[in-house]
Image 1 (cartoon, helix red, strand yellow):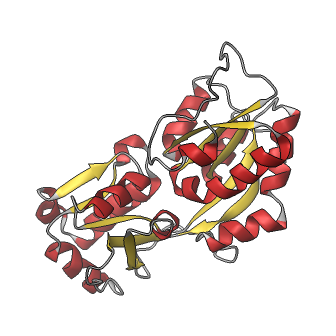
Image 2: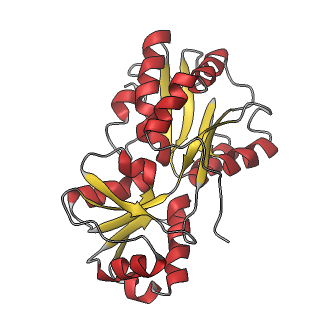
Length: 263
């Protein structure tokens, strides 16, 4: 199954080529570790690259922290698409080839509701606090799984001082794409995750970005694993092309936003 086909199913197993043997990794297949925030945005350029080159991308999606642990544990990978700080840590560990990291774009954390529902006001800390307290149920990525937006949103809840009030109506998701799934299905009323994931779904709406002072911008980047194959280098060049970067920008990855942590 190609990446373009596998990406239609949120949070599914890594895509694999039917009939291939996986005792090793051949040069005809490229192993990619990709953060969930970039999953939907990667589908179109991946399909185009596969069509042009006749190669297959075997992609493992998940939280950046979880994929980092897989790489440190020795799982085979050719290309990373993760948050820039995570890639830099892997570079320091000798798992990313020096000088190959380049930015895909920057995205922030937004609030998501099901399409057609009234959009809550989240434009200020006070408005966000009221919206969260008024929601019947809430979901965000589980920090225990290394979801970066979920880790940040748990900090936001603590900062707003409403942790006990939200605990009983919060359903944690494994990663950001599952946050959108739960809201789209109507099983949860409101969620928080990376805006790039929200904008990729036609079944939900972006109520708004987290307000100033509570926002966390994350820059995602690509980088080659140490010892990568030549096809993986070609894929890296394709990802870095002006055409592909413009696509990521249309999918919610801004070029101009600086990465910033809450102060």
